[in-house]
Image (cartoon, rainbow, N blue to C red; front, side, top):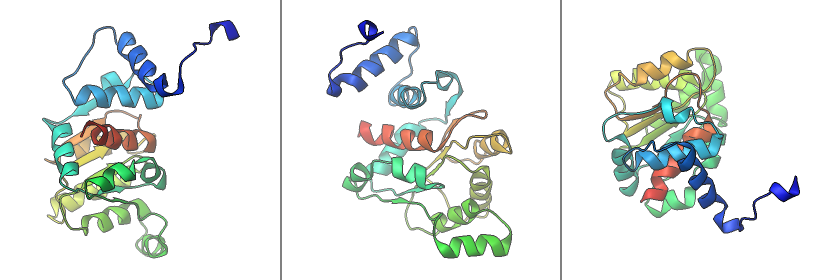
Length: 208
């Protein structure tokens, strides 16, 4: 099998991967920056379904990029998504990534209110100043609570990345957020994940 291994310089591996993805899309394209986001989601997951299920509201990617350029913060529902975001790049524009999941008072409040920590995290994120981005990669309850906070007038995100993964309320929570009147990037259906949420954030950052 060694004779089938491609010899690619480390610095060229990502470039070659993107070339392969573009080839396998068989001529399908999107306007930028959406095309780069789609390709990066496929690159992260090796799953070409993202070419079909990734949905953008009108100008969502450009709106997100403009917010990031102006110092928007990113609120995530998992430490994994938080870890995957290029914080050095984000901070170069004045932004910061936040995840409140591991804070003791969040866990305590969730127990007392009999709700998920992810829902509490969205409330903490809503209290941050500025027009920020919410990147949800795991918990449908985060999207549901975010929708409620928007309806209550307690938060107006610049952009919502709604990418929870799984089976319980995943599809429904994504459809809900697509009706919230807020710019969104959402992989419809069951697929998603913290890695996809972080990838979408990074794809926008790398375009700036």
